[in-house]
Every structure is written in structure tokens, then in C-alpha cells.
Length: 454
Image (cartoon, rainbow, N blue to C red; front, side):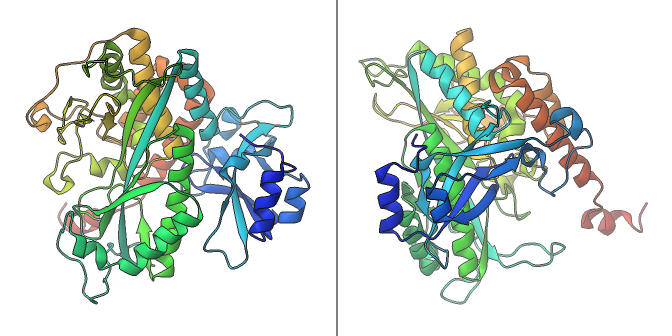
């Protein structure tokens, strides 16, 4: 991590790209970019902005929990933003040459801000480091392109491609369907290249206008940064082409939901070998313990993988949700399970967590998944037997709505201790506030079927 702007590499980069402004970014609880914009000259001179720690208790609606004085200091303490200059990238859609830099947060006394999502992930990675292990992850992010929608009372619709026709049928894996939006994706790849985002393949997913982008595997914090930046990028590209890019878990009622599948493996820090398989390629005890930890703790951690009221529409046992999981069964090359093990050689042995929605905060989803696996290693748990047929026959075994998921998280002491009690209490307060706000809204379904019939 580079923090000093006097580093010649940083100054050379700013000069090469003629940077005039800097976006100082901080990922908040929802995964939105908070921060300040400042002149590049002042930034290079070491000036750093400050933000109040209350940014981490703001809900998706912009409100704050009723008990906010219990979870943050009533004075709204200042945080000093400390640059992680290894995250310095261009903002390719900006009119003037602009840099974006992700920042850590520390109080003025030097203490870390425990509720910062980036800090939560660092906390989990430090536990693996103590074990002599290094996690490697690769996210797969699904999203929808939809028509512009300026009235929230109207449902979303698929966009028109270059043919001028709306995509109204599902065209999974269709190259021609992707090429309908060739201009959008050419710009997306150009932006990602300018930002040095390590994206791999692009495919058309099962929904109308639904796509999936895959990232190269790598360090969890770096991949969380890239997923965070990619969401900004895709939304900007879509807007430039007169449409929206959305990572809602279930944006359209009759279309499949969008996920963020997370591939995970563990390397021995000393040897660099994958500890999930032995020399003969057979699964190790660490592999099984990791899966068992996921099976045991994922239901309690679900509020971090399905963080919004909308998230649970994707996880319903419903044909429109296609291959969304409804439990924590595992199996080899089985897309009906929550925990899939793709066929691979020894070095590529990994576990794919298929439960997280695309609407997650990537820092928190990666941290929570690795935390569940870590607890399995510590407890030396054994998993249930792998499922070879449809895991849907095992039934729905996840909390069915945000309220139940928050109750499960509140009651899980091992996850509280691992992720940080202050963070968990803050997260619970924010999400309970969002849930209450949603419950106050009268839906069109209620007006349609109850207005004149009850």
C-alpha cells in the first residue's frame, strides 16, 4: 500500500496523465462511493480531506437510524482519509483529466474506523495471514441493461439494441445478443482498460438484457476494489448510451435475479500451493473444513450477501429465478447448489459461493464468505455429503426475508467476534432502518388486489 504522494511513481503518473482533479473515494455500507473532489496540486502536496464517521450509518434512502447516537459518537467525529495510492486510477468518463483513489479511514487519534467495509475485509485477511494462508478470489458479476426509468412507479423494461428492437426473449450465452449492445461494451472495455480493471469474459446471461462479467482471480482486497469501481463504470457507460445499468438483485419480476458468484481458494503463504488439494489432486481436510464453515454460517451471514429487501426476491424458490440457490448444499459441477466446486486441476481447486446477489457491498460479501470458511477451519467442521442431483429437492433453508436474516446475524456470536461487534451492531441498525422504511410503502400489488376486495 502506497500512502505518500511524494513517491516518484505517483507524481510521474499524475504528470503523465495531466491530472487536474482527484476523486477521494470511500466505499460506504451500501457500497456507494462517498468522498470529496479536490485539485490535484493540493492532493500531491499531501492535503487530505476529512469526512464524518456518520457516512457509515447512512441508509440507502439517505436516512439515519433512530438510535444513531448509540452507534456513533453524537459529535460525528471526523475521519482522516488516508490514500491507498495503489488504487489510483483514471476516471475515463470525466471531462477533465481526473484520478480516482480509494481511501482508508482513520480517526484523528490514529485508530482505524471499525465500521469501514474495507477495514472489515482487512480484519478477516489478517486472520488468514496468522494461519499462514492467503485467500484468492474471483468474482462473477451479473447486471441488467434496462431502459431509462424516471418514474419509480413503472416497471423496468429491457433496452433496445442496435437493431432497434427490444430484447424481450431470454438469450443465454448468445453472442449475437451481446453484439446488439456492441457500442456499450466497446466503451465498457475501453473504460475498464483505462482503469486497469482485470476483467475477463463477458457473456449474455439468462435474463432479457442481463449480462455477466468475470474478473481474473487475485487478492481479495484488490478484487473488492475492482468490483466496487466496476459498478461505477458500468453505470456511467450505460448512462452515456441512454440506458441504465443496474445491479439490483431482482430488478424485473419475471426475469432471473442477478448474482455475484464468488470463487475462493486458499494458498499456503510459504509455498504458494493451493491447500484445497493434495499432490495427487484429492480434496484435503482444509477444503472440507472450509466448505463446512460456509454451510454452517452462511445462513447467519445472509444479510451481508442479500443486503436489501429486494435481495430476497432473487432467492425465492421460483422458476423465474433460474439457478439462484435456496440452501447451502454443495456439489461438484452442480449449478443448483449454493456452494459449487467446478472441475479443475490441483492448482485451480476452489469453492464457488453462489448465494451473494449483485447488489452486495463487495468488501463485505468477500469478507463474510471468507469469515464463514475461516470458522470452519478453526472448528475443523465436516461438511454434509455433496449433492449430485438437484439441490432444490433439499428445500429452502435460508432466511426468507431481510428481517429474519438480520435476526440470524444478530444471534451469531462467532461472526460478531470475527467481523467486529461494533460493525455488526452498526450494520444491523442501518438495515433495520431500511426494512422499516420499505414496510411503510404501500405497493401496487396491495392496491390492485386489496383495494376493493377486502
